[in-house]
Length: 161
Image (cartoon, rainbow, N blue to C red; front, top):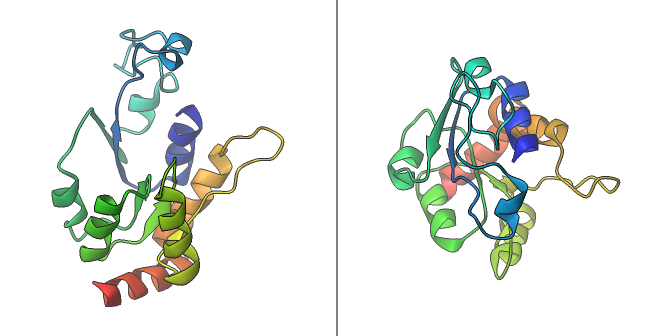
């Protein structure tokens, strides 16, 4: 989550990020839930994140009306887990995707969207750190929003729409 936050910030592209706080299960033990720094940034995001991104980003806790957001004409891309409902919402709204599959059929969906339809990109996992680093996230967001490759994906998904 920290690398994703840094990557979004470093991209300098406007974003909406729906962030669910870590739960109190086994993974939640790595976080101090409920505390935040002076600008309201919770501990599970980089210190000062809200202050540094206040002009480019909006962080929404827990839930947002995804279909309504995706239908807005200013949305240029959608980073998501590759569930089928979200895939259909993105395509029917003409929004290219950054595919971040987690489990089950999501990996198959990601392969289809990136390799067959060419309307999504997938992050490269660092082999040394076994994570998707902030530089990779920054590059994907910038590619989606400002590069020719991103515009080509937008054209394809608009045609599918």
